Image: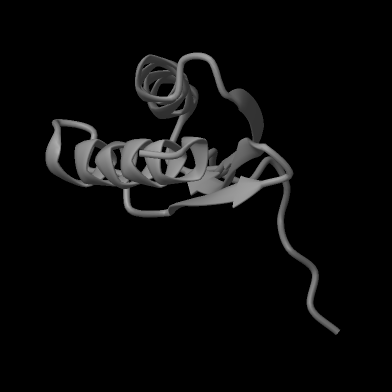
Length: 84
């Protein structure tokens, strides 16, 4: 297997783990970019973000990992919305 094949296999395994483990996170996109791997998307909370990154580091050890994971805001509004 070449390095690219190995990276593709590891990315597929990461996708499977994110979908099937307790985290069940399907909002994360994973792409091979410039010799590394990019994770991006929106997750439900800080704990979820941390778990996604932990699993990604396990599966992609040795590959450059770039992440842009945004935590969805679920706090109640602090002021009334003004409509015009």
